[in-house]
Image (cartoon, rainbow, N blue to C red; front, top):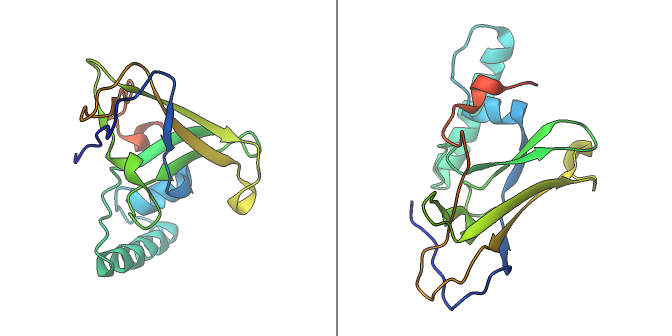
Length: 159
């Protein structure tokens, strides 16, 4: 990844930012980034929607890789898992460039879904980045993505 770096010395416990982007349910994520197999009328329509979405993104020069998804957790209002898709730069911010490190992460990511009604009666996801330790100016900002961050999300879909 590109990476994000401290522009000044940072102390432990500082809130540095919030991960932003489009809020998706697991079902919407599958429609957007799913396998592409078309076996039923529903999957055919989903494939058409995905093709139109990809064409619109491509026309704006925005990728459609699915590599900027962040699982915010379960919504207390609906019980559905919510994700934040930070891939579109017009909807996201600098936090999408924070890379993974298990050796000496400098940040923690605290994710929660607030019981504030957002789009379609879903809660409001919030992912907060907080410094874990002293961080020197120029040091790369990293966090541990956790176990299974590179596991195929489709393998444990429950919706």
